[in-house]
Image 1: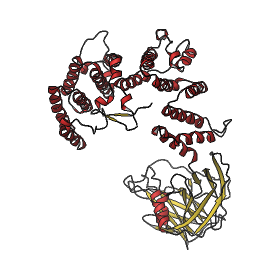
Image 2: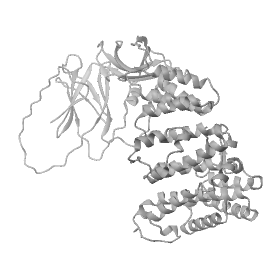
Image 3: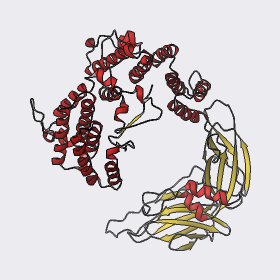
Length: 591
């Protein structure tokens, strides 16, 4: 059975304070929430002295949890005192108290090393050192001490098994989904110790790795036969011995729990197994043998994720239907809330509807145009066309270029769009039918869009979503319908824009072009010039092309004046050839 215990050690507060210490711990909590960590640490020191005087075991351990938490904000002298105190406390402690204090101690060392890794690793490793001042330790010193402490955590195996974690309820906050009576101090410390050894276990590197893998995935009785002394990899040897001792104990004292331990072992080793089919064949055997309903739900989650990850458009078989069947079988049970939550997530991945749209930014009046649609689990979409002011169009086009003022306000496009469509009516709506293969894969297609009058538009694509009925799956795109197109040129004197009819390619005469500081008109050839701006001026500008009721919006970077130089002048001639009959919006030429 999976257990979920939230250790206060780093992140959270226990709400189960001992009666005599309730007020003090409330004070610690208040100081920490206010960011007064030093004051909180001083109160913990007072609690420790009180608990030490009365020999209140769980409060002493809890104090060291908090001391370790505040260690990084204390000066080196205070850090040394904390380490000295916990070592002294370990020396006079025994059984579960000693093991838990050792765990706190090793976490202090690990966290200190991680925070100061760069400085520590520059120190010269000595062949022999017996210094107990951790402030002077080298990398080797930390690694040896950490390894030694982890090897001691499970030393008093029998006693640790017999002590329920509930005896330390003032230190741990226990999930309501956990049967704390079955969760011992040994279970907690074994999990931490295994994580330590697995962290350094990159691969097996064993001569008989295939045989070893087979045994690692076998039942407990077969696994017990593996001789750990034949394993050359130290981390793997330690891991095997820990699993073997625990499973041997459970077989003798609580045989009903053995399948959970076997599953935990198989699950932890699974990431090292390249042959996933073999792993799941062994898991299937366990599934048939166990009657543990909680465990069965976990196994179904593993199979569901395996089938899900094995399914692609090019895979031989589509397992999504089988996955959905597994999902429903777990959701209909109540024994394992965690498994149900995982299956809900997986169900959403398979069934959630999704659409995305690619569409050009501008089209001429009455142009036939199409949208490129990527969709999943969608058979129809509703397309709504909203006419919007050019100011909103400019906000939707904003992409924050690197040269733009970083102090400009950030715009949440989704909020802007959803608020607009809620308060405005669409000028046109239509329903588009998409290819529907009902296999839960993603597909693409093109849809013919509706013709629109001159102006700026927000096109909103939506479909109902099975998980969020209050908000449909949607996509949106802003476009402008305009007969105006342009080509930008740069030279030493002007920013030049050549205006062209988007459909015919003919020059557009007497159109108004506005940037953020001035306005000019196009001549008979469709050309309009802006004088270059002074250096260090704001070079990013909105740009409007206006011809009667037709307005095209864009942005550009204004060129700046160049410093005069006495360089030799050259005469040059350039020739530009365009292979396409029509230029795209904002085509730029530099001479």
